[in-house]
View 1: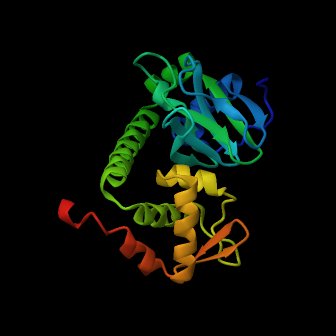
View 2: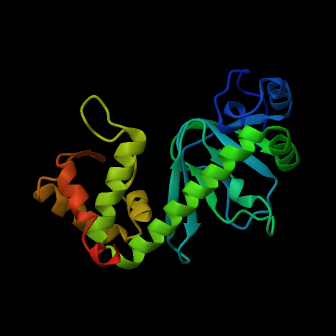
Amino acid sequence: MAKKNLIGETCNCFLCKYSLKEWQAAINTNKKSFKVKKGEKIFKEGDPVTGVYFVHSGTVKVYKRWDAEKELIIRFAKDGAILGHRGLGGDAIYPVSAAALEPGVVCYIDMDFFEASLKVNPELSYQLLMFFSQELRESEKKMRNLAHMPVKGRVAEALILLHKQFGTTPEGYISLDLSRQDLASFAGATYETVFRVINELVAEKLITLSGKSIAIANYDGLLQLTQEGLAFLV
């Protein structure tokens, strides 16, 4: 995909936000940006690392292969978020994939310039360290849930996390156009199981539906489902 400057100098991405004012001109000179279509891959697991990416607009899913036909969504990234940072160091390959959930614009910085930015900007280095720490905690929690939490609880937690990250529309529905397959990949379950669980949650008046849109009708009830199966771990 062709990378070129599509946006002006005003940017609130992870790199710009935590870099020195004196470094902004260098960022503007080195960054490239490109439009992505819905479903378009930005980079894929196993690709050689060339640089890091930042979401300027739109929403991106970050995921790993689960098996030959399945994927496990690690997180969702929206405006300003960093992508591809897991390719730092090591074997210099991307250990995850990233794909656009909707049309948007993504900025790209090659790895040499990004590493130079980390050396010049202590706040950027510190914030990236904090971000890695948070990601590690979330990954450990996700692995624990996959091992010990019933599927119904994982679906409930997925809906709560989406509600927190993306907020709601004026009508009260989660502000993310997410397919049932992607919801299943985020919860670590099969499409068929998530379809059944969603119907159960509707019948129990914990959520309401309008097409693909989902609204949380009973937050405390969903939260209680996330505690089942984990009490013995406390």
